[in-house]
Length: 365
Ligand code: NAD
Image 1 (tube, rainbow, N blue to C red):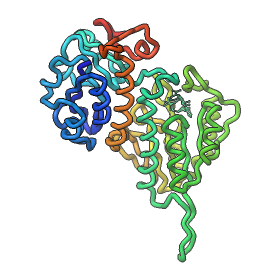
Image 2 (image 1 turned 120 degrees about the vertical axis):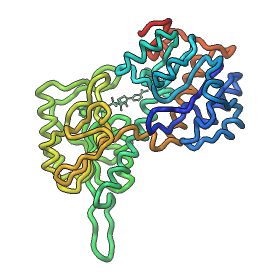
Image 3 (image 1 turned 135 degrees about the vertical axis):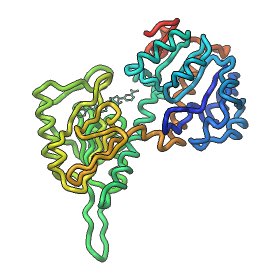
Image 4 (image 1 turned 45 degrees about the vertical axis):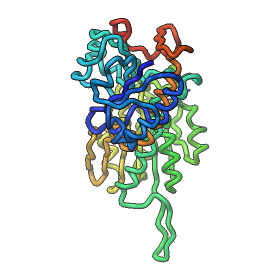
């Protein structure tokens, strides 16, 4: 396969789709990897390291020339789409549910596309699961952002001048990001509690040393291990439980998502007003509408002394490790797509490829 990697152009995007170690493995397996010069700079992977791993470096045009696969992190700009050669396969976090015009443009150019968000959550595909790899990092960083914004410490501290009480942290949504947020807040010494609508999560939360906030008769496990939207009655009970719990919290990290829908609204403006001044909410669902009514993506909103942080693209703020794990996801996918002879095989009937294929044969699927 001839694989290309370009420098990402989305604002504030610092990740790169393949790291030098991935390139070395691909080259060893007989594939050719071309990189736009400087593609890994922002993530800390320099051209010389890629060259030592066997990549060919060049301009964007040289990199695309003759490529069969373009490995990307984010969606391509319309200008880039117009330059993609027909017959190319694009792999990336393409946000297919929100990107119909992009998918149409790719189909019109005869470019096929695999969306990294659509890796099926089956054991065989775990190493390709980019949502999980990036969500773990985001959950970790959300707690650090909260810790920095708080006017107090997270751990208990005993000093000659008195004892400082530990912060109380509350994590809403205990999926991949939420569990990592719980673990991070615990490591930093906070007293942690969490809530999720999927009852199976309770044990995972407790095994991390956090307490589980119980809401009677709420069980919203949907397809594929994901949550589904709550009924009206359930939603009212969940909101009441969260409202009662929030009053005493210092740090709140929200991560609740329902696939293909806007994020559930779990903290109203009224609830924020009941919280202590100095408390912080970090909303990881900011990009899909926010779990908190006051969230604005990319901004910090102050309400009665409470900071509501609308966190966006946190993985890109840790580009070295985010690229390392994303690159591993892409590498594993590319290995899956390669035949024994090293050719690209795009089989819509394959369980993994078929689930991820959003544009094929000039059509949006
Ligand atoms: P997600 O990002 O879609 O949602 C985050 C969390 O929000 C989920 O735990 C969800 O239950 C929760 N949530 C939704 N509505 C809520 C509400 N109203 N109140 C509180 N919480 C709410 O989910 P995710 O983190 O991507 O993972 C979802 C599941 O998939 C988990 O069980 C995870 O372990 C599983 N998973 C499996 C695999 C695999 O088998 N390969 C890989 C990754 C994740």
